Image: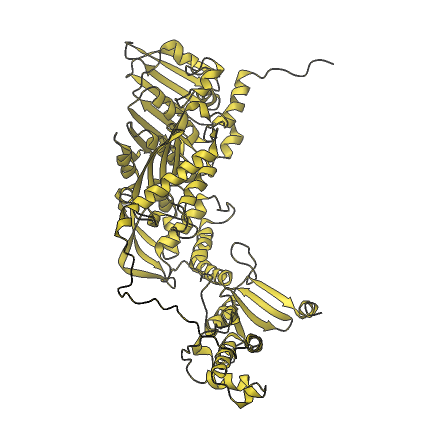
Length: 636
């Protein structure tokens, strides 16, 4: 049998490597920008068309390359950063493996113009599919100019997997932001389809954050600075009021290299414990400087995941540093030891004898008799009835009569009915009210006189009796279905009902969020949410959907952006339907809201008028029925 194992051609091997290093146009921009930073550039321009699918151009004023180096740079594993294996643990540059240019040249048409300061002429190299097509002298400025055309033109399967232009542009903005934040001393420009998106001058890190995200972001940042033996931590963290439900303003940098580290992210969240709104994430920009020997940056092809030698120690240092910064700005409880001498301890002013306090004891108190009365109260038929029963028992206990002395109990049902005909007045009693009255409720006092058939359990579920047994309805999911189908009908009719704002609310967004809002603006307008861009990343909310005045526009938009950023959009659905789903989730009545009997009845009627009453827009169950047979089994 002949040999079957053979070496792959370089062109095929480079295409395989490109699948790991170059995942999308944003990966190309990341690699080329990092190479420019390593070359000492102080000004970098990034120009793209069709989100990098047609053209990516990166121009820098770095040191440039000689003719031989320019040709060798496209060979696989050709690098000037390392010479031996030990160099991997002393790295302070971005690129070092020599895979980026070889991978890019394998799946695109590449043109490079580069010149050193000491050379009179530069060199121009044209490569396509790893094959050098031409190499000739050229007149060009000092530095390097990369022009990448038709990405994945020879790998059509990979090109089909690219997302739409707006999505790929968001990834480009993300990579651009990461490089920009890590290198505030470099002037950066991003142009897409001949429209300038960023023009960032060189400065310090605070100026870079303000130039990228606006003055509001700069006003809500708290500095963090800790210098420990193992790690030096610096940067900024956001105030709690700046926290959002959307991810995107969280940045970790280790030795100026961006990284994703869920473990250290939990350290940040732990430091913000009990001072954030639920399901929100604070913004932070944290730089960690460590010895390169205690960190491994080579565990992932894109070098975005990093492994520390002792993650637990860094976790504790980071969490303590953030807590210290929050305490300094009075954003969390802290102990001020400098004010201990101001504490005044009260002392007795008279010199008389101290009298020991006495305790009054009721020798006739019978705890078993109290327990018996509470057990009787717990058999009330509903929340309102049980409330009046507990009050009646408490009143009877305080004012015993002859019937109690003979062991006869008063008629609680008659007492409850008489009390329900009057307005419920607060009644002070020394005994605690039974827990059952807060678990099951039949509605507010305004409906107490009605013969309601709905009950609310823990302000979350609506219970009602049906022929087959007991029906339980999730109130939030039910309202989601009702609001969603209302939005769908609005979309189908093409006529939206909106409420104009007398005082338009102003919202501020980052560049990535701005691009998403501009993309979704026509569909948001169809649903009644009208936004007007006023510059500097801010939008004015001119109108909101009618009937949703109790929901702020910031909550609606924040939820929509969360769904679209997290990739929860189903490509088989229309974008407008996905927006309707997201808006319905944010506009629905929340858990914990007490509903009156009338409100529960209207919710019930509207739910069963829907086309799909059994499931929420996201496919979750709304209705569950416990049949009589199952209920009987529970009492056997």
